[in-house]
Length: 256
Picture (tube, rainbow, N blue to C red):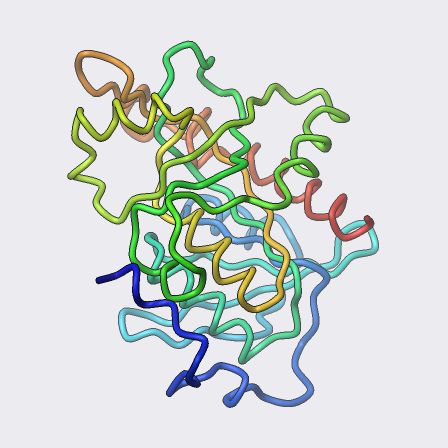
């Protein structure tokens, strides 16, 4: 059973700390995106220096850094899904010195009363994926520990936001109506593919994790509503304005 996978009695066969290099580049916090559009925007608009690379059979992931408001900010684009995203965090341990990670991206909206474009801040994540069960004891939900700090930042900066549970799933095309109804009844306001995995690996490795979502497609309707036009970036996970939020949140977190 997947719920029997959390093992603290024996060592991992491959441990990132055993493969960790020396004199690693240090950043105050590392921002993770899933958007090729935002990656291109950051590379073109900030003085990025490539400081590391995360090796991957499907393509290497370059890690960049730049200075902003007196802080050294790391940045990279992850592949989607908990296994890939968690693997990227583990790879980061081997190639860089960083204790804080901030991930942001799009998420499906489970409540039509939530205004489109409002930032969603998850405070718990339903573990409908397999990766987290190797990093945390079995439970339906995992607490997103720094949700309060993220919400405080949004409040102080006058950004419209809503706090609630999220549903992390491995199976985008198996978000069935019955499962949607169950998660919504439990208070989930969003669905995405990485949050519970990110939180579990960061808890396990003693790292800090911060996150927020862009309210994207609407599931709370008789028919799925993508809520965007072809090639639209504004108001989607490709909206560069949300990187601006992530960057200022990163500085806020690093300063506190």
